[in-house]
Image 1 (cartoon, rainbow, N blue to C red):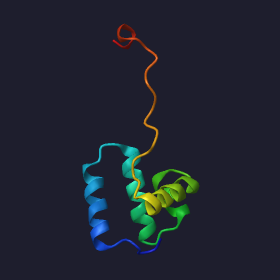
Image 2 (cartoon, helix red, strand yellow):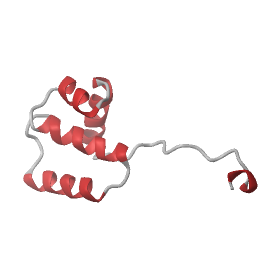
Image 3 (cartoon, rainbow, N blue to C red):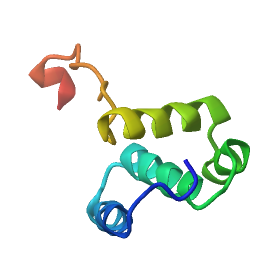
Length: 85
């Protein structure tokens, strides 16, 4: 994915990174930006402390669907209201 992002796309991703509070989404944005800059999947994985297959998936998801948010955000709590308190 070397230098396939337009200047506008890069600017938008950087702006999204700055406002995003979810760490997983920020990692996805960083992965896309770093791969576009020419870093290898292995280098990006090392930088972000993830494995290279995860980075590959992040980049493919973005290229295919412009996807940055993970699909699974956890599950509902099994605790009732009192237990949660």
